[in-house]
Image 1 (cartoon, helix red, strand yellow):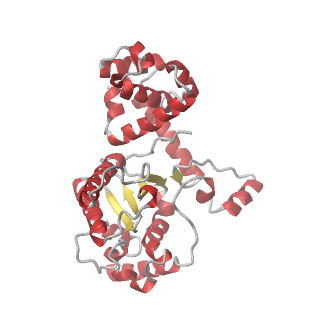
Image 2 (cartoon, helix red, strand yellow):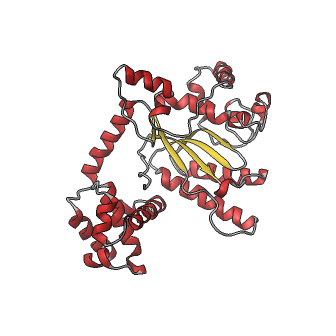
Image 3 (cartoon, one colour):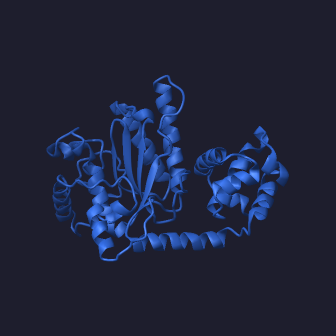
Length: 330
C-alpha cells in the first residue's frame, strides 16, 4: 500500500525522525553529529522554521519543528542531502545514507508540544546513553540549550520553549527541569500517529468505544479526533480550491502542457522520456481525484504492483522538487 502524502502547512508542528539505512550508526562520531547539527542550524537561519526540541543518537535523529513559509520537505531535503554528501565524502562511500523517507508526524500543538519536548530530550537517557544527572551537559540534545549550558549558537527557539513554563527565565528553567525529570517513568511512545497513540493508549480507546465514543484518526497525525477532522477538512477544502481538476482528462491535459508530451504517450509510452510524467500522473490521480491505484494502473496498462511503485517514486519526487505540483496546475 502506498504511503500517504505528507501533511504540511504554515504553523504545522512536526515530529521528524530519520534513521540510518539498515539502522547503521551514521552519527557515531562526534564530528558527524556536529556536522548534521550545523546543517540543521544553517537551514533554520535561512528559513522561518522553528525548532522546539532535538536530539541526535548514533543511528537516528529527532527534530520537533514548526513550519513557516518554508515547506518541511524542502527544509529536510536540504539538511539530509547536505549531510549525506558530507558523510559519503569523509567516509569514502557512495549511495543512500538514510532509511527510506524520513518520518514526519503532524502533531496537535496544544496537546503534545510539551510531552514531545520531554520525550525527545530524554531520548538518550532512556536509551541508556547517559544518566539523567549528566543531561544538562550532554551536547547532543536541545536540553542543554534550554537550561543555558550551551555556549554554541542555538538551534532551539529557547525563549518560546521557556515561555510555556513561566514569564521569568530563572523560574521557567526550574519548572522545565522538574517537568523533564517527571518524564523518566513515562512509557508513551510518540513516534507515530493513529488512534491508539492519539487516544492515550489501547485501554483508553476501548473504554471510549464501550461508551459509544468513536474518534476520527489518521496515521500521519498525533492529535484528538476533533483536530484530525479539522486538519483533513481544511486540506480537502484547500485541494478543491487549489486544484481545479475535473478528472483524468484535465490532469492529462495539464501534464501534456507542462512536459510537452502527448496525452496518449503519457498513458502508453514507457520510455525514459515519459518516466517522470507517468509517475506524477499516478500521484495526482490518486491524491487529488481519489482514484485507486488499480484504476490508474488500468488507465496506463500496468499492473497494480507497478502502479504502487510509481506512486512511491512520485512521492519522493514531490518531496524533493519544491512546488512541482503547483507548477503543473498553474
